[in-house]
Length: 280
Length: 314
Image (cartoon, rainbow over all chains, first blue to last red):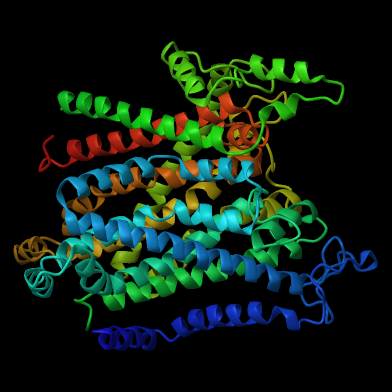
C-alpha cells in the first residue's frame, strides 16, 4: 500500500515538474537553517557603524538597525520558525490521532461526548486565548510550541475519527477482535498504522498553519522574544524601519510565505495522490 | 423552523457558559498580576492590597467567577481596570467598526470567490485556472500582518494614496474618507477567506458537472450555458453557506491582527491592547463576544442552509 502511495506521489510530481521546486525549497530551508552556524557572521553581534546597510555583496540581506547581518539572522530565525512548526505539529498530530482514533473506535457515548467537546473547543476564539496565555506566561520558544500544539489538534481529531469509523469495520480488525485482541492492541496495531496516510497529509498542512500562527504571535510580541528571533519577530522589528529599510520586512516575510506555501502545496499533492480514485 | 431555531439557541446557552468557564479560568490561572499596572513605588503594602480588593481580585477564583456570571446576567459587564469606563460602553463603541469591517470583507470574499471559482471551473487546467489556483495558494499561505505591511508600504508610504491608520481622519465625516481608510483592512481580512472559498467552489462545480442530471439535461438539448447557470451553479453554491459558517473563526482571529496593524478602532484592537494591560473584564467581554459571534454564525448558516435547500427540513 505504501508503495502505491509513493508511486502516485511521484506521478503527481512528474505531471507538474514545478512541484519539485516546493520540495526543494523545504529541503533547502531545513539544510541552511541547520547549517546556520557556518555563517561567517554572529547573528547577535552588534555593530552600530554598519547599521541599516542595504543588501550588498558582503551582506546579501543587508544589516538591521543594530548592524547585525540580516541573512545570518534570517537563517537562525528559520531554525526557530521551523522548529516551532515541526514540534507543535507533532504535539497536535499525536493528540489528534489518539483522540480521533479512540473516539471513532469506541463510538457510542465516548464518541458523542468527545465530538461535543471538540465542537465546543472549536467555537472558542482560540487565537485570542492563545494570545492571552502567551502574554501571561513567560514568552519563549517552549511555551509557544506547547500552546500552538495544544490548540491545533481538533481538526486532526475530526478527520482521523471519520477515517477510523471505516477502518474499524474491515475484516482484519474484526478478526483480530475475534481472536481476543485487546482494544489497546487493535487501536495501536491495526487502526493507527492504517491511518498513516491521512495523518501524513494532516501533518504537512499542520506544519504550515503552525508556522503561520507562530509568526503572528511573534509579530504581536507574544511569541518568540529576544535573545531568540524567528521570522515573525524579525518582522515585528522591521515594522519600525519600513520606510527607510523595506528590505528588512521583505526578506523574512517572503521566507514565511515560501515555506508555508510549499508545505500547503505538498500537502495537497499528498492528499490527491492518496485518494483512491485518482489513479488516472 | 421556529422551533428548531429556539432549540438551537437553547442548546447554545450551556456551550457559552462552558466557554466562559474555561476562558475565565485560563485567564485567571495564568501568571501575571493586573494589580502591577496600578502599583507605584510610593504605595504601601496595605494600599496595594486595597487596590486588589477594589478590583475584586482578593477572593478565590471560583467566587470571582460566580460574581462575574451574576453580573453578566444583570447585563453588567464590569468596569475596565484601565480607564474605569463600563466595559459595555467600550464594547458597544467598538462593535460597529468590527462588524462593518467583517461584513464588508465577507461580502468581498463571497462575490470574488464565486466569480473566480466559476472562471476556474470553466477553464479547468487551463492558464486562468492555474493562475487563480496560484493566487489562492498565496492567499492561504501569506501571513496577513506581512501582507498588511506591504500594502501600507506601497499605498500609504510610496504612492501616498491611502491612509495607513485609523478609521477616519479627525474632523472629517464623509463616506469617502471612511472608504479610503477601510480599503486596505478589508482587502487584508478578505484575502484568505476568498482563497479558501474559491478553492471550495471550484471543486464543487467540477464535481457537480460530472453528475448524471447534467447529462440528462444535455441530452434534452439544453444549452451548456443554461445548464451551468441554472443547475450546476445553484447546486454548488448552497454548501458554501456551511463553509462560510466554518470559516468564521479565521475571520474573528484575522480581525485581531488586522485591526491592530491598521489601528482600526474595533473589538480586535481593544482585545489585543487589553491583553497587554491585564484588563480582565475587557478580555472576558471580548472572549465572550467572539464566542457568541462564532456560535451565532454557525446557527445562522445552518438556518440559511435549510432555507435555500428544500431537501433539508429542520
